Image 1: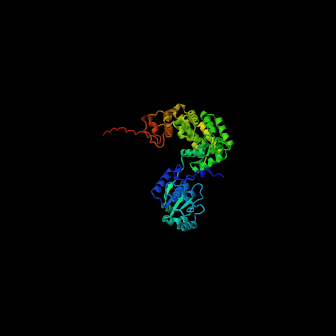
Image 2: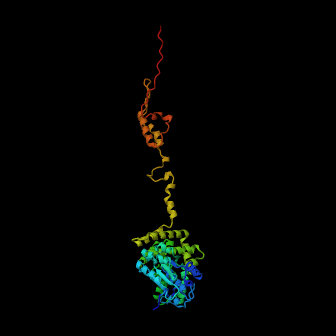
Image 3: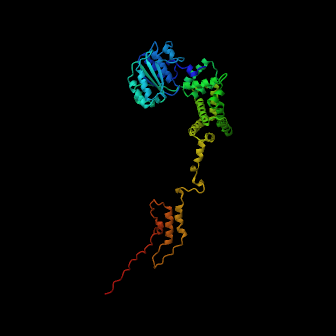
Length: 476
C-alpha cells in the first residue's frame, strides 16, 4: 500500500521544512555552535511541523557526525529516525494524552537516569504536552530543571498556556506558525509535479484554502483528491468534495447584484439551497470573492496578490468590479461581512441569506435614502403637513391678546358723580389669554401702558381719592 503524502514528503532536515525559518535558523545556529539547551518547547497550530522538527533535532543530536545542523542520512540513528525508519531506541516519543499522569512521570524520571543504549543522547519527545496533569508536571519538574548530561527534553503542544510556568521557564520556547498561502502553493505544486499528477486550474488554491495554513492538512486533502480521480483532478470534483462554491455561481450572483436583477440573484441563491450547500459557507465564499474583486480593481499586480488566479480570471474580475463601481462594491462587502457575523448560530440560515440578498439589492443607495429622510426638516413652515405642531417662533398668541379686548362689551362712560370702574370681565379674559400664551418658567413681561386696564385683573381698582374742598373762615 502507498503511504500518505504527508508521510512520504515529511522533511528529514531543517532545510526542508517550509514556512518556519524563524524557528529552523536559530536551531541550526545552536547546533553549529554547540549551544543546545537541555529542554525545548515547540508550540503552534496542528500540522505545522512541531513533531517533525523534534525528530529532526533528535537526528541532528545523535548523528554520527554530530551534533550537526545537517544529518548525514547514512548512520543508523539517521536511518532509524528517517521517513522509512522504525524509530530509535534512544529517542522515546510519549503521547501525553494517554501518559500524562503522576505514575507515568515517575516512570519517565526513573528511566531517564539510565544511560542511552547506543546513541549520544537519550531524547524524550513529549507530544500533546498540555495534556500532562499538574501533578505530572510537578513530578517532572526536578529532572527537567537538572537532567543528566545525556538527557534532552522536547515538549510539543498546541496550547502552551496550559503548560505550567515552572516547566516553561526551564525550556527554550519556539512558536511555530501557519504557513503562508504563497509558500504552500509552491510546495504543493512541487509535490504534484514529482507525483506526475495533472490538476485543473483553480484546484490547488482551493486545496490551500481548505488546508488553512497547515501543511499536513493540505497534503491530506490533495491526497484525497488524487485518490478519487482517475485522470486529472477536475475543478468540479474539488468544489464538490471540499464544499466550496463554484466560481461560475459566484460570478453569476455578483453580476446579478451589479445589474440590480433581483430575479436572477434569488434564482442563484435558490440553486445554492437546492444543492444542499451550507448557506454560511456560501456567504464566506461570496465575501472572499468580493475581496478579490476589490483587489483586482485597485491593484495593478493582482495576479501576485490573488494566488493561483489566471490572467483571464483576473480580467473578468476587473470587468465585474467596473460594473459595480468602487463605492457600491465596498458597501456590498460591508453588508456581506455583517450578515456573516449575524449568521453565527442562526436557526434559519436560508432566511438570513435571503435577507442579506435583499439588503444588497435595495441598500445600494444610502445617500438617496438619507436625503429623502432629511427632506421634511428643510421645507419652509408653510409647506409643513397638516396636524404638525408649529414651531414656537410662529405662534399666533400675541395676536389673540390684541383681539380679546375687542370681543368684550363696551365699557360705559363713568358719571361725574362716581369714579371710573374698570371692566372686570375684559380684564379676566385678557388674563386667561395671556396666561395660556406665556410659558410658566418665563417671568411676566412689563405691562404696556396701553393695556393698563388688563393689568389690574386680580383686584378691582380703588376709586381715586377726592381732595377736600376749601372752607371759608367764619366771620367773627
